[in-house]
Image 1 (cartoon, rainbow, N blue to C red):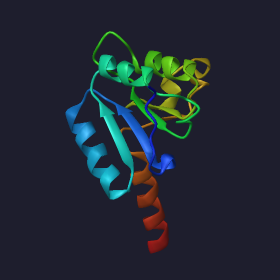
Image 2: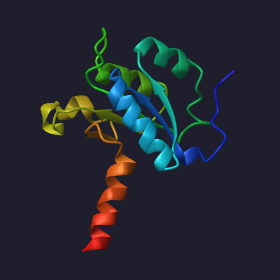
Image 3: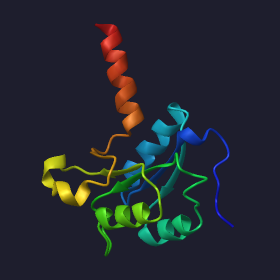
Image 4: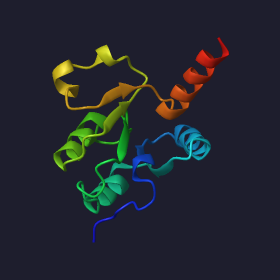
Length: 132
């Protein structure tokens, strides 16, 4: 049976990262930002979860995939699997600048971002702009 997120589907976020500290920060920021976050530390765990997701019913789920996963797969490979399953809101998280990657290789991604949760960064930028 496919997994379907039922509450506030636009707020659903999936993170795949092998760094426990990064996962802890994302978890904390998700709670502060009223995001519903599912975290995976290994590709195996994540791919089992992905097999149960229905892309049509979960089209608004955002995937954030660490580029350096410490296992046999790179994040870009996992992102391609996600894309192949019909999901389109896929981001690569990395310490590298976006120009580190071949533009053709990442053209299907929604974006390449740093390790900070994007909703946290955006809310901070808005707060800074309001202070000025």
